[in-house]
Length: 146
Image (cartoon, rainbow, N blue to C red; front, side, top):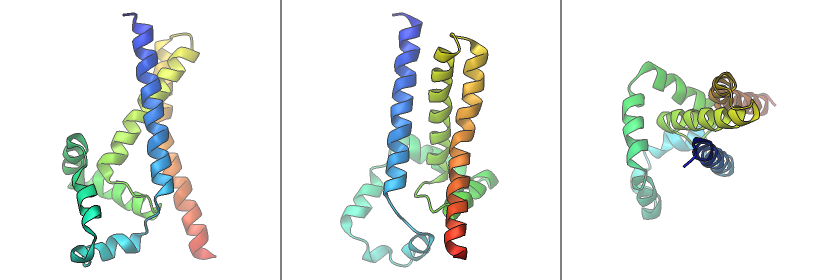
């Protein structure tokens, strides 16, 4: 199979997963207050929500365990809470990797299959989720001040 077709399929899948992930994050509201109170109301949660939380993938669980106890994980967690995003630090890192891969593939094709264009696309893809989080933080701060 031609490498161009493999890269095209991989980039297309990564881009679709990125768009689906952003859609899910945007469409599911959750506030910081709900997160904080959730510790105390664990027994009152419906059974469906507990089952949904247990269905997370093994890769996501592994990544969350590795990132949660680090200083970087704490910074990411605070940043996501300030933006009122319903993501764990490991999920956010996975989103960054998917975005980097997807944008790199698109840039690689648009740039005439140049490795430099792919690398520039990967760097841009890594910064896109951070810019999105910063934008949501700004919007939330403006709402809070109003």
